Amino acid sequence: MNYLSSRAAVLALHWQVNVVRPQGFFGPLLAEPVATSGVIERAVRFHRDAAKAGLPIVFTRFTIPTDEGLLVRNTGFMQSVADAQANFHPESAGTALIPEMEAQATVVFDNQKLSGFAGSNLADWLAERDIDTLFITGVATNLTVEQTARQGTDLGFFIHPITDCVATTTECVGASSLANLELTTAGCLTAAEASARILAQHDVPGLTGFRGSGE
Picture 1 (cartoon, rainbow, N blue to C red):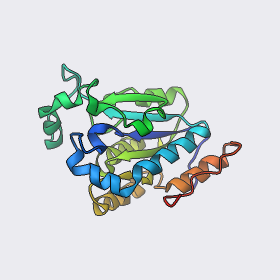
Picture 2: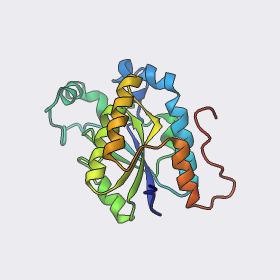
Picture 3: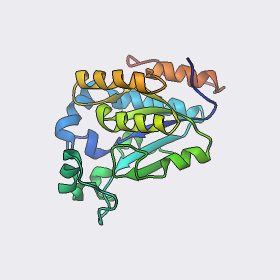
Picture 4: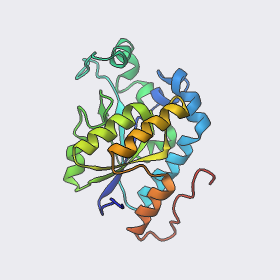
């Protein structure tokens, strides 16, 4: 079933130095699998094509204000980032979007939760623009991607995780997470499939769409 409405956006999650670069806080876990997978290049192309079709590219960053804001140390994950919170202050180098994507952002939302909807006005921003369909890219698949996709679905959005524009520590972990999301969202799509749906509803001269990971 094609759930794509006329008002869609790309939701790009945690494409920041702390998450995907070797020098970032999560670099020891995620930088190598992200680099090996080629996911950054694919996501950049997908964002670019979606933007040419007029879709907003909405980014989220995980940050911790100097007064800790809404931070709650209720999981091991949150305790670990709290212990190293200087790395996550909004102006720290680690919280910056990676250079490949920085210029692609229509808007950036900062929050302190795994879900991009928690502790931010992201849902209100989307609703104000009548956006009800979201194509999700980001890292890590089993953390912010899955958490955001599930909450977004519960909020009434039609969520499509983009399977070749997300990554995590291992292919096995990522595949398991995406299998869950296939059941709990409007359905997973590849970048090529999502681009085909977007292009079917937008007349964009010269835009042929995403041609896949072998492009």
